[in-house]
Image 1 (tube, one colour):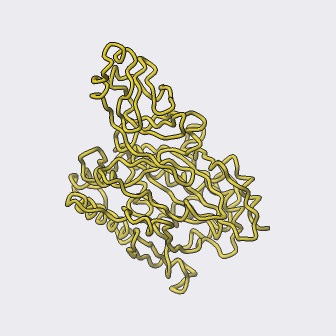
Image 2 (cartoon, rainbow, N blue to C red; image 1 turned 120 degrees about the vertical axis):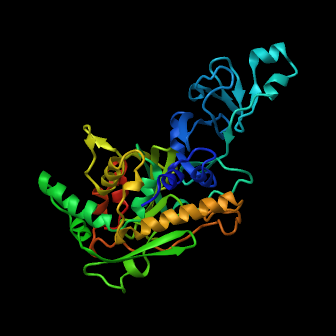
Image 3 (cartoon, one colour; image 1 turned 60 degrees about the vertical axis):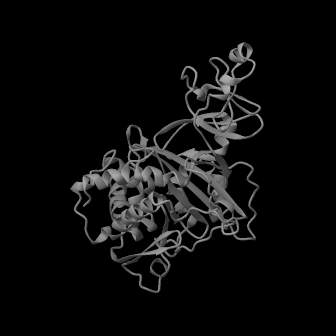
Length: 415
């Protein structure tokens, strides 16, 4: 159980708060690159700040204050120019740093440009990697955008799923430090839902119902491996020997087999809303023909279907659990047990990292050495649901079913 003050410390992400300052030390995904091809401006809310992401006609990206400094109109309706974004109301234009570089009428009256030189809005760096666009909102010097292996490895196909979830980001990430929930929420509850609807219960869901017998959590360079023994497995199995990693501070790395590996990234929109990003890499054997992927597609994973929580597949079941905890769960009312050791560990690591930032240091996973950042690899367990899994069938039973390109993905699977 936390005190009310500790709960506020862990959940508030605004500028100047301990967790807000910690999260501003990291790059956060804010859009698929393809979104800016379809429309070159996008309103973005990140860490409690209202911004506009744009792509100008030279192909450069900017992320600046959403509202023009002149009369405070919404720049997400602005006009991308060759080297900046122009306000549609009176023509003021801003570059990617937020500096005003043109004021058409004012420049006519005051050719010296002294007025525009004094006008600047907030501007943050943007970089693209693996089909995602990332923003950094922290202090200088800007760290390197982490080149996690899922973003950069060859002979792979990728896609991106988005969901906006009306709750605090920490509720999402604490789920990743809680292995036992899978047995109940996705196993027992999933079977219950299938029985109610008359659907066939797939073998992997039955396997998820196996009771947990031991759990453990091992810190490593980039976060924590959560390890488990479930009924029918032992210490020789890789779900115990290797484990299942979550990456500090807000990423879960998971897999549905030898081919499909994903990041679930919990991006704080503000204190009460989260952008949930699922980034999936399908890595195929060398003999498999993988078509060139000029565009990394994106799709929505629905939170609701016909006005009710989407409970069709495991990940939206997690969404339901997080949302029903409330916008910011009151952790002063918790009764934690032995299964919550990983949740307690995550909270401690967040407090420690916030203290590191307060003392002027870099928290873990802030990268500044280009050589160390070329491709950041980590080990991972094989999926434990069932040893004779059919990966294509499992994908059809997962959140990838909402991807319009699902048939193209399945066609690339061997056999």
